[in-house]
Length: 88
Image 1 (cartoon, rainbow, N blue to C red):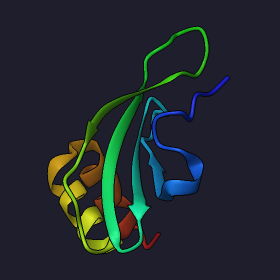
Image 2 (cartoon, rainbow, N blue to C red):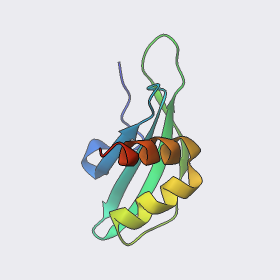
Image 3 (tube, one colour):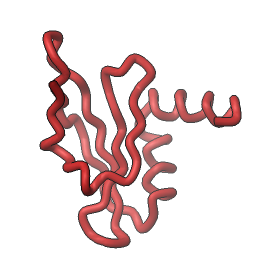
Image 4 (cartoon, helix red, strand yellow):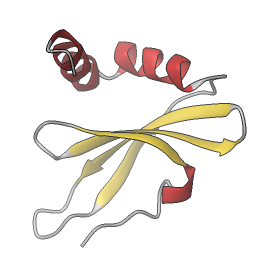
């Protein structure tokens, strides 16, 4: 059972789940042309419940938000770099 109340699905532009499935990075937009990223973690052992851990500042593009996310979120940087290296 999931909880999507923190960042509503209609605001999500991109979602990247950590390899172990216990965290996800979401790039989202509440207003046209303004983007942010948030990190949520799965904090309940019994069922899938997400808890918002952090939200970034504002960016003018998805690419800018993703670039800063790579700098600020170690698991995203490592995972994104290895996927890019593998050609994904």
